[in-house]
Length: 69
Image 1 (tube, rainbow, N blue to C red):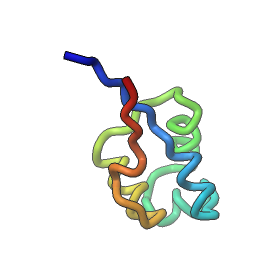
Image 2 (tube, one colour):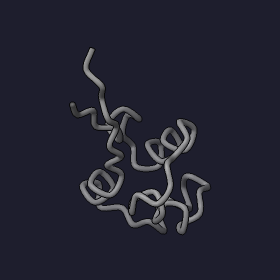
Image 3 (cartoon, rainbow, N blue to C red):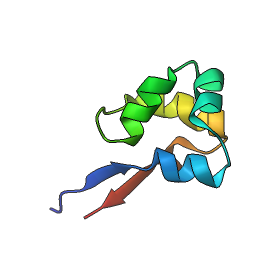
Image 4 (cartoon, rainbow, N blue to C red):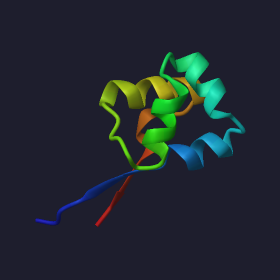
């Protein structure tokens, strides 16, 4: 069985949607500093956080997760 790693790609999707961290923070209710920490790989988001951020940038939550072997 292959192991899969999950890469969080929030920054890429956020920039594709032309949204700032400040905008995402305001809409999602998550602090801008927490979003920054997630984007920089210093913190891992919960599934709830992924869902809130996805809603803020109007993408499906799975679009924020990239599965690689």
